[in-house]
Length: 350
Image (cartoon, rainbow, N blue to C red; front, top):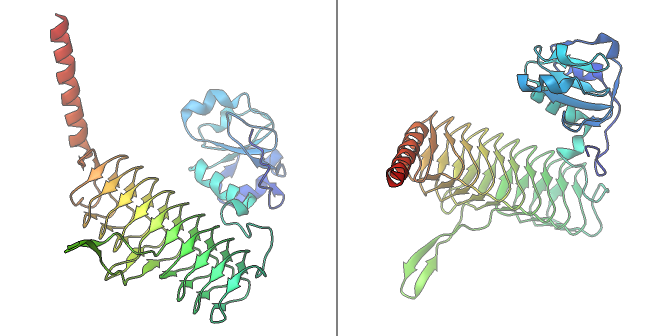
């Protein structure tokens, strides 16, 4: 099944419209006016779908396609049947994603969770809050004193925005998220249940046990950041927690106090960043990566899934393992251990 009950196309889209979005060529000009009704995959395609193929392995599958629109590389184009509209692109998936966003814009940034716009009568908004025109605040939301919210922003049902927070323009704050002690830039997307700006996990030993450290910092989230559902971003202790422009954070990620994340980073699910970690620009963390406190990861570095990082990683490197190390060293050690185990088994069987 690749039709959607929940998302409807924003309007009619034709093959020629996708061509204008950046395709290199239309290999089948006779299908330029064909309508595109939905998105699909090669494995589960229906007539009217837009699909993409990238890789020589797809060639045998193309012969079975129904009347659809295909974005593919120049190599794959001749394998498609005559009834398929074929758009050629060097990066088919990128063009497919661009067309998909245009066809289903509300899957990227919803305009409303309840289907209503404007300020709900069931929202609790402080008299001291300042909202620009075209802000939507849905039922059950609470907006504190001295909050500023930019135009085009959607505050979902049950959201709490604490006193003094600033939220930029064209942002989306998903249902039941909380935003406290935070400044958000423009076009920030925070998914349902995320917690932004609560105090961090900071304690010192005292005469009667653990005593709590004050956290007087903020959370600064720059433009174009996306934060997944149920992710937590703690405010700084004595400085700020900062998330750089364009960074994308998955669901169920923990960002501790004083963490500084650069621009255009990718942090996938179940990662944990301890206090005062620093990520450079374009850093990529695989799922379930853990970073010890005060670790620094250089620009463009990548850390494989389930790694535990105890030491700084220089720029541009790829690390893996627990404890993490350069990936070539990690696989070399894995190979050595496997060879030892294999030799031991063979000796036992002799």
